[in-house]
Length: 447
Image (cartoon, rainbow, N blue to C red; front, side):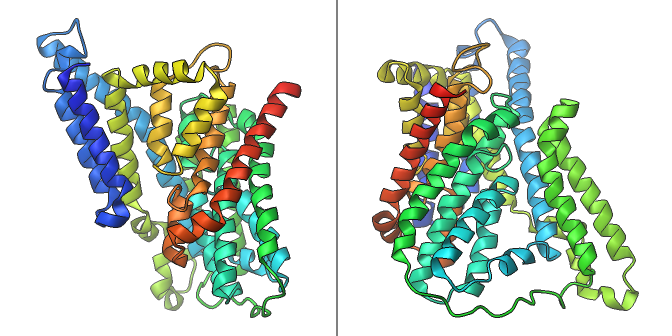
């Protein structure tokens, strides 16, 4: 390994450590990711001929620019998909589309509420994304559960269910979006073969958690949520909800029918939702517009979390640099040697690691380490790629810092690392392993 390659690895690891200790340094991880990307590629340019033999002079620099454009294009497909999906969810939410969630969960029975929250979070996170679903469900819990201890259990259930639900859907988690965009998994394949393992990984922990709840809740106040805060009629709000959520569900179908990348479908849905909402707001009486015009798509675009988008940009482009210098290939070969080629061990370990560090660069790294094969475990919808989708998604539930859903709950509910590790980590691990065993049984005896 050359000194230059070692310097690039050091720059990446240093940036990664800073991202991992964001809660200690209080420095936004997006800033670190962008600097890490620039550092890796700047070091690459110190002597690009070392990594691109056969090119010299202007041809060498042209090839480097070509590589950057290729990697940026691949990264942009994921980023545009995320921006479109985030905007759609924001429009639906701001126009009262998710009010039905709170009304559906109107019960005083603690254990019944636990299971209702678990299943609703599980399926919503598959349609939307686990981060948005977590925020919606925590806001609902604030209106339903007063007791602090009980709410910690419910909030932990949201983390478990959101991560499990996102793992079996091509649009439910950033990592599955990445794998789907790269065409290593298909929507039908991952839903059909990962759904039951993901469900098991959620049901097993929730079954254990229900015994921590006793008695009944105080009856929640009848829902009158935001009816007076939105000038759209109930029918218009329902139309926006079904257009937005239905459009998200339709994106995999659109990809199958047209063979266009998923981000094209998501932008189509966004365009239709934008057009529809503009028509609704344009017909409001002038005296009723006022502050309600803030809920138009053109104004809601400013609410999109661009920090998250830039974080993914920095991470994915930094990983691309590691791929170009050959580090990921070497790591892939080493993992195969250590595990004896057992994909369950490799992906299982990646899932455990994803509970400590962000799963986005882990999955990006694996995509660079292991090439797509025409047949076998590494083919499209092969065991390795499906297990990677499951393990990277569900594995993050084992620690509160292991997923975006967990970090959100940590901030909104002030769940401590120690409390979660003592009460939730053991049962999350059991659920994780149970899902893997379930997947093995399905692949061995059914698929």
